[in-house]
Image 1 (cartoon, rainbow, N blue to C red):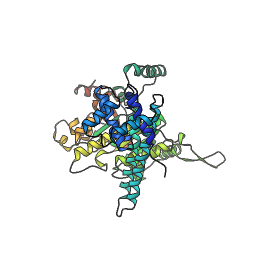
Image 2 (tube, rainbow, N blue to C red; image 1 turned 90 degrees about the vertical axis):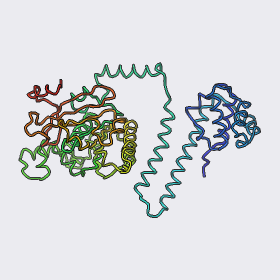
Image 3 (cartoon, rainbow, N blue to C red; image 1 turned 120 degrees about the vertical axis):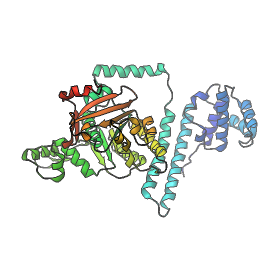
Image 4 (cartoon, helix red, strand yellow; image 1 turned 45 degrees about the vertical axis):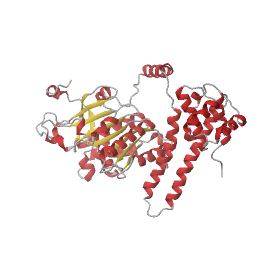
Amino acid sequence: MKDLHNIDIEKAVLASLMSIEKCFERVEEIINSDDFAAGRHKVIFNAIKHLHNKGDYIDAVMLVDRLTRTGDLNEVGGDSYIADILASSPATLFQLESHCERIRYYSKLRATKAVLDDANLMVQTKDIDLEDGINNMVSKLTDVMEGEKVKNKTPRTVSCLIKDFVDKLDITSRSGLAPFVKTGFFDLDAKAPIENGDLVVVGARTSMGKSAFAMSVSVNIVGDTKKTGIFFSLEMTAELVMQRFMSSRATVELSKVRSGQGIGEDEWVQLQNAIADLSYDRRNDDGSEYQVPLAEQFDLVIDDRSALTFQQMRSTLNKMKNQGREIGVIVVDYLQYMGGIDENNKVSSIGFITKNLKQIAKDFNCPVILLSQLSRKLEDRPNKRPINSDLRDSGNIEQDADIIMLLYRDEVYNDKTEHKGVAEVLITKNRQGEVGTVRLGFEGEYSRFTNFINHDVEEGYKQYGYT
């Protein structure tokens, strides 16, 4: 079997650290003590790190003194082993970093083997939940790689960062393109622009249209970026999601799309045009089949598996990325239906989920739009407009979200309202910008949101202090 370590390289690194002044800074961002295969080398490295952190001079004498005081000298083989490292291993500043990279490489190999060994034991276990087991293994393998990303991402000074800032500013100013994800809703983009890597929490009570809102946003993002969007529908089946999608796309009433009844001739044409536009299989002029390339497809993926965990979501996203797809937006509909929520400790387990969804947003460099149900308690208030504390188990959700949007439609509570067909998006947290309220149009018959253009109700909104 292939060796998963190189003791000579480990000795060479330790010899360099003991022999060459001020070289520890070169290695501390590449390796740590756990990356060494030999247990005694872990102890020696930690002792060297302690001397460095204290600002002490690092050599064999100081190292032996440190190991003697901590009672670890015999564990590493005594001062004779320290002398052996210095005598037999070449100290090198030129090769130091490449040696550390090699130690890190072997460390990753060992970590990977440990996960695969666990997987081998798992498949031999009776009565195992295979899906959970596989996702656990995928999560552990991901952790091996994520640790590498964190290790390679070192802190940089403002002087180092200024070039990236100027380059990005120059590109965006000359291109006229804002570095934000376009939701398709102009007022929303102006007040609360969404950036790649953001966790956007959308909260609403039942029947406010949070699924329709998320679908509208994801459709607009996929259409604008030509990237892949994925809609994790934990509540509705893929069939129901498709009915809403086609109703919105073809501008045919949802009730007709669902029942198949009462569809007029013009509406059939609208549906057929929408279907032809989205169809994967088409015909060439000679009648032969033509398969539309992925880059030309409307690449919105619907995953309707119930009680998905964030590990399963990450696994799905990794598969899509390995297929060459670039993820443009992720929707989770909705938080309270996700797997992995401990009913006896909801706040903690939901906080764990939101932190990991935020990490997914960063890792895939796209927004994650997380839908959340709101507490019924707001129904008891005279003013039914939601606030952040209405988010169920809201503490961690508020903390991890970059943007929080709460939906309200007055017509749900008031049949005589002047604001029929109007939705309010209450931006109650915005890490990078304004809070406030944006109005959108709501076309319930087509299950979609639109830009707000009904200026006849402007006066009615002044009573709420909106501008």
